[in-house]
Length: 342
Image (cartoon, rainbow, N blue to C red; front, side, top):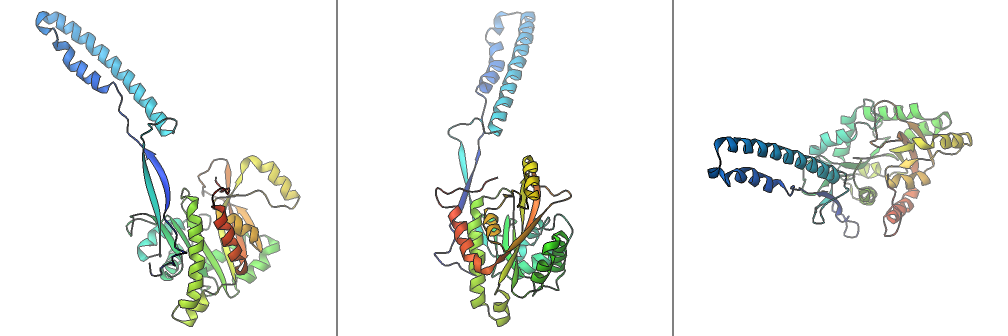
């Protein structure tokens, strides 16, 4: 990495476990030996006809045994796959997650992560990926341990200055998309923020099954690097680029289909519907935001979770509230505290 984290800020390795094992049916070896050796026991004492009859009988018995063993194997495989049974000596594979500065080799992986950033609509994602990679002193990608440069990132968290990048096609398309989804009562506020100086668009995308414990180091790393960049960048223009006053966050949430009636009642009462946060930090940011709006995702975009309606949430967070948000995100993962899980 081009920037080394301070010792107190450097994230420790995060681990998750996967289980696998291979089982061998106990009767397999016996069956093989039996089918080969048993006919030879008294072959010299029997006639050719007797031998042929016995071979036919034994072949039928062996076939029946094989069918029974096959059924047993299938039952064991099914149990193993759904996790309902397993050997106490199953092997655990520990996977460490490492954090890197975005590099050119990550381009295609970043593009895949941003594919559905605008609800599956086509936009200039390549241009956005290039912007993220070029400002490699701020922002992080996550890869598995030992992946180095050869594997695609499974998460990205970075920030783009909206006003400084206003002429980029990707920023224009993102702004137009948000204006199209914004309710009438917030349109003026959104339009004003999109042209205001010192507004950062936080890009926070990751694969669905990445451990939630990656959230604190991603959040800490981003805001630490923003702070360092305002002091350490070589030019005044770059230092000013990272002096953010507000942040726009566009993230993914879901709505439980089983609670539609309750959500309709809340809507009539002018209350927010109950949202399920896929990323633990989003609940904290949402609680502290100045305003927010959400909408249902249309088309073929899926969240991979049954009975939950995919939604998008846009919110504006004041930079002055970020220290408190960081503290609360850390506390989510302290021992004994509740961790949001879906």
